[in-house]
Image (cartoon, rainbow, N blue to C red; front, top):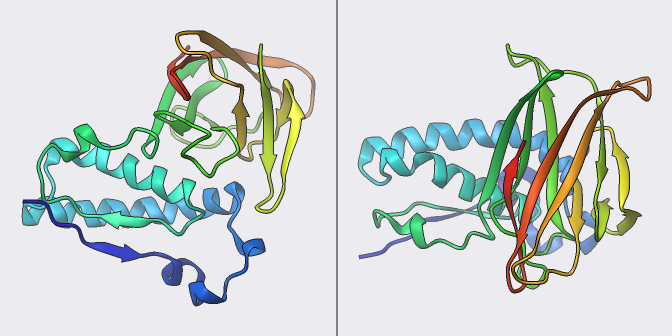
Length: 225
């Protein structure tokens, strides 16, 4: 038996009636990044209660949280919280909704990349595969740097909530969310290169590669190294 409890988030985050919100009021990736820590703290507390009540399997806890975060980021903060009563349901959940976190250790610190398990232009409201990078020290403190992305095909995009701007195949970001898209050709694999730059100088601190694999109409991050 499957049941769902859906909690509307719009009022909690915006304190306004959804019917009164114009198209120009959509939250940007930068807005959502600022809200995300508080949202994740809430999800952690909620997961504690769900596991305690037998509504969520402990083994599904991390996947459930990533599913919720992905839904939140893709729907401009107007997502829903699904409490699953069916064990194993996440195994057949839509991968294009779930967030994915890839972590790699570099000479400059620990790089965390938040993206999606799969991105399809057909099904996602986002302008491309999200690439939200953060560099931290071993103790978890943020390390100042800039992120220079280089793509062999396609383009990077920035989005201010109302306008999607194509910034080309190479772009230096100060850490705000960035998106990448190219027309997928099923079976091909591409590598996006990320150079971690000194915050004030054009000096490369470390270089990593994100491998992405194309499906029929989607891109899936495979590895970060």
